[in-house]
Amino acid sequence: MNVVAKLFSGRAAAPAVDPLRGLQAAADWLVRAQDVAGSGGVSAYYDAAKRTWAGAYPETTGYIIPTFFRYAAFSGQDEYRKRAIRMAEWESDIQLPDGGVRAGTMDATQIAPTIFNTGQVLFGWLAAWQQTQDERFRTSMVRAADWLLAAQDADGAWRRFGSPFANHSVNTYNTRVAFGLAAVGRELGRQDYIDAAVHNVAWALTQARANGWLENNDLEDNRRPLTHTIAYATRGMLEVGLIAGNTQFTDMAMRIAKSVAGAQRGDGALPGRLDANWRAAARWTCVTGNAQMAIIWQRLNQITSDASWTVWAERANRFNLSVQDFDSQDSGVCGGIPGSHPRKGDYMRHRYPNWAAKFFMDALMLQLRGGV
Image 1 (cartoon, one colour):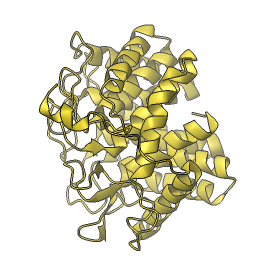
Image 2: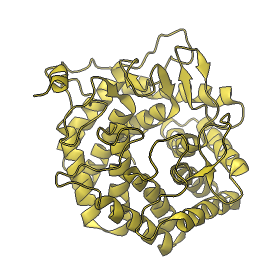
Image 3: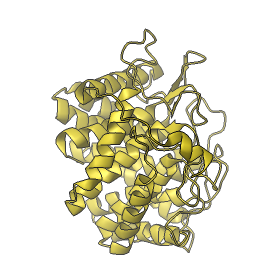
Image 4: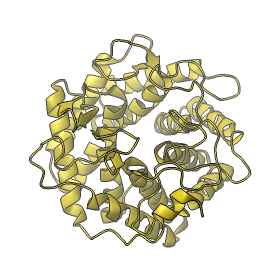
């Protein structure tokens, strides 16, 4: 056992916290994050050290939209549906002329379309279209999907239009983009979108080592990818496989999900980074990655009817609930989900990202209702 793994061994389970309370608190936090942005979009994060909110973030606002539609149905609070529609309208307002979605936050000085962000906003426009049948949202998602098709390389990878704020130009976690493209293809009967998604996941599988670990799968350090980006890649493989009926993809997603589960600590958290042998490569945990893996494990339970997947998911959810602060007098902290725990960890240090709250909500709604 390596030094980092020793630090993670033998930890007691996190204390129980009411998931309904945690779910509502995270929803309230996202409401504040939307209101402080003042545009319809959602602030990217709250920096607790500086006590400042970041600008609205098109990428993650895009995939918060379906979360708010789900929470409106779950809670019976129509406010969240209205807020989701406002987010989708804002996304259409700021869509770039070529159909892409800009990198970074709205206060970034550089404006450039980027593959990953465009793929994530597809989820928002798709949900808004399904909920409202407003042609504006259909038009936006078709323009974005067509842009993604035009930008794809012949081998299925996306190498052009990488984010100027990330260190790598080619990423296996772009399977999360493929997932959005396939979902739009299924909704609109566009086989070309589904085919492009399959092509990308097939390329991603060429990056897999014999043990299932993926190359080119991190924002900064491909030797030790974040559980956050591991989960992006895994969910993309799983969902594209289900949409396309490709068992090779779903089998690989299941294999990765089991390998990640093998690194889970006794308290339910995962190491923030994993090395090429699926061993702990960080002393802190990436709370977002915990939530994303909880979603994947619950999806695999739905697909396989194997309840063992939910054991890992519920442990992860329980840990994440235990690090949520319900009592802080700082409105940017209260109910939010930190990027890392401890908060000084290397991922989003001292920050509360909106995507952590989004995936946290999705994971809890799956546990409480069993819905997707």
